[in-house]
Image (cartoon, rainbow, N blue to C red; front, top):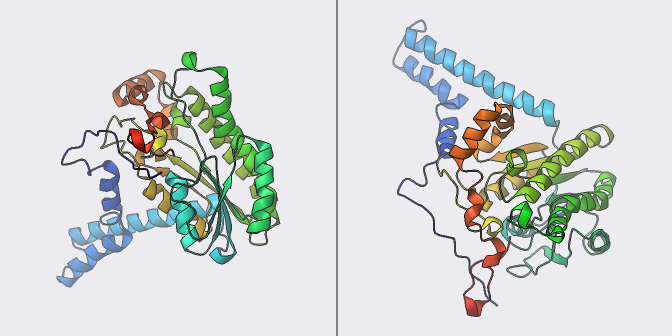
Length: 362
């Protein structure tokens, strides 16, 4: 049965595409880029300006400052995450949980078309059917027996896994008082315990690989801030972030050839949060899945360990909890963090084609 995706009404205006992320990106590729910065004194020199002229000295000082910042940033990245591993897509076996639609499916289809062997684990059939290079396995990651069974099938069909992308997630979207115990257990089993089950199952394959492997963890800024009607989801994402960092510390000593990628996005435009409106499209724009997918794919392709946070505010979210409690309370009210879920629809928007399909779940 065919499905379509209709976004909820948005408060778009003519300047909606203009966000702080776009402004920063333009600045980083122009005025704050070393190459552009050094062009300025060269242009002055082309006009026969003397080296000791004030505009020349200022432009040289600025270019030198920007260059040092870029060098320090590269050194910081190397110290934090080490050297990249060698990646050969024809030899990679990539396991993606929750990859039947949304962000997971984007990553799966890209790697399938590029020659990697991709295994998608999901409780639902793939939205567009199995693509070239992508094999679907019906699996509920909250069930450790199913995960263990599917791991054996993947090794038999595709070979030992070398990349694990923990992407599966669900959102209940209710107040804790309104949630049943079974809903809490289901949420935590999928969003948190599922990571433990897949890591315990697939990590031994990665440690045995001569080329090492890559583990990608999908977390969320909600794990740092919390939010009304997301107590279960926030608790799980906070746990996932802590799990990733702890595991990275362990593997750095025992298996340094394994690369760790932590992804901490803000609100992503997928049916997982269907109906939720961003409180400020300029400061907190909704992230498109394709943009997150591009960052994940680049990290895997280059064999990097890294931390991916987008949009811009997600990179500084750790500082939120450093603020005085009163300031945090004011910031939450101004940002509308605890009001966003009031318009939440989520997977309740899934209907049959006869009734008018709204979305296909994330």
